[in-house]
Length: 359
Ligand code: NDP
Image 1 (tube, rainbow, N blue to C red):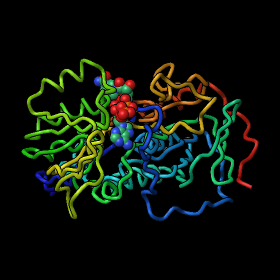
Image 2 (cartoon, protein in one colour):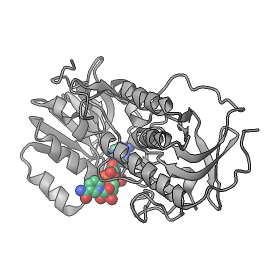
Image 3 (cartoon, rainbow, N blue to C red):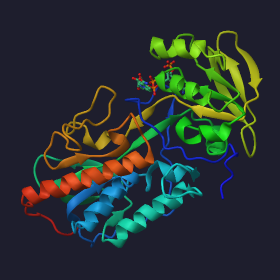
């Protein structure tokens, strides 16, 4: 049974709302699964459905495509299993009343996909060519072909880049108030950031925390005026302007923050039991530059349901969604994309595969 009073649990599916990393922010690119298997170059590299990404969206798409006899190949990406694999307890994924560890949940997704014949390869896509069918993607020197492609490469949270942040992530440091706010009931916490996400997270966290300190590195907020006004009016939120976090304090859990006032160059310590980092997200769209359209926030756009502007290329999960950004919504999106791909393939005869095995 998880300890639901603990500030250390809870999963942080990292949301993506920022088109590019903000200055001075770090994107998490740590491999989540220690052993990345070497690529079997003799295995088939052509498939009816090529899935890019192995988070909840990609693996759910793979489960559905595999059960539709489409023998999908999944290119898992730099963080096999996606963002849930760098989190701890997941308590809001339906079907697990006692909670489940993020890595275990994603291992189950993968086992389920493989059980029905999906092949998951732990490689990162470098580039794609969506000019004609079969669509092509390159990863680790291997060319993969898909009659249809589902792009589910997710988004990466931006982090401050402090060693103490890395160490205390899941131990009081989080990037998702919806996921982890519950654990901070009755506690004093902080949120860092000055955009709408930070405002939203701070307001949401007032439902649990006794006090929320909102820390921003400048005097003007980037957030919309209405959100800023709401935060300013909230008696539970104290705003600290022109402060940066030099260090997150604590060994096993967060006990405070070492802050620096950038105007006065003064250093202080703020005793809090949690820190929510809300400094933006970056969708993983790199390989699709020039192929797939983006929306104004930098996320991949869909034209109809999960269809991209290229027929036969579908988009699912956080690489597209900056509104809900939950494991369960990403999984639902993966299901939709697989069903769309299956229907599309049924109406469009598969292309002749030029290559059937990797060379
Ligand atoms: P933003 O890029 O808008 O804001 C990021 C904030 O984090 C900025 O204030 C930035 O500071 C600060 N920041 C960045 N890096 C660091 C760092 N290393 N240390 C300290 N602070 C840092 O991202 P958001 O996620 O807030 O919003 C992205 C988009 O999504 C926006 O268009 C927003 O309007 C939208 N959104 C809308 C919502 C709504 O309408 N309800 C809710 C959430 C998001 P600085 O200002 O100094 O650059």
